[in-house]
Image 1 (tube, rainbow, N blue to C red):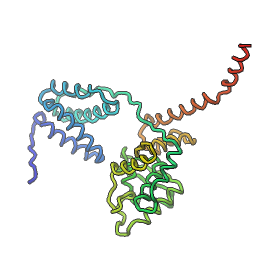
Image 2: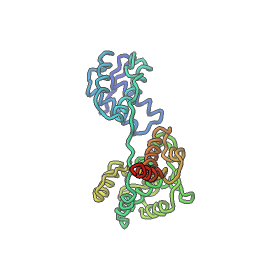
Image 3: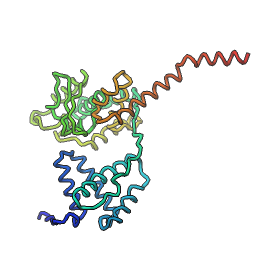
Image 4: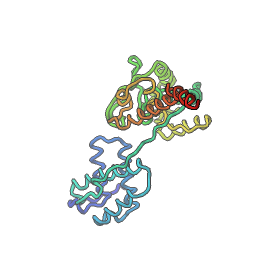
Length: 312
């Protein structure tokens, strides 16, 4: 029997569950992704599970929010909690459900982010790991190749359909509905990636049609990011390193800049809405230059000679 949701005409009498349901309906109408929907729901429910009386009075809400956000967590975790709860509560204020959002003006914490540098030799060995004589091995190899060639996000890659692959133009198209930023983009691909994708698609049974994603299970079903993470962990465990799907995106970004691409091209390729995240990769490459400078500066020899002369 379906649940009956009680409706109240007075917004201020809504429970937090009713308010959250209305907010999620609103955000769904705006076109948020399924993952973003889950994140809003998860963060709100986590807060009210920890502070079940927070909705009872304004003071309880303030006290609960401050306690929740005062927990010692990584900046990224704090920022996620703040953003999702703040957006939900701002909507509640706008709709007259609550009178005040205690964290409306609270600022995010500075997050240096996590940029991973993977050794080139490790990446070469990783590409040798999948057994390309099997469909699953060929799929894994193609997915690693595509990520290292384009920096595509794991979730974006796993939603790609055959129609998103344009071999004639050497391109992969990411529709807006599947992009994290909800902005479509087209990614150029290299010859080896193109040939491997064509091999992968040719290995599919005809009955799968165009509905099965490019990177699917051996049964033609969607492959989720957790399963892909487990697959990659299996390969990298044998190599004695730990590489996550997102680390391949980082590896692409660093090598892309090191090989001469400009930061604006990287931003567009990665699908960043601002240069804030892209700058992290550029900064790491700058550290490369500093390291090379420390080794190769002419002053290294000149100053040694100067010191030697002084001692005489």
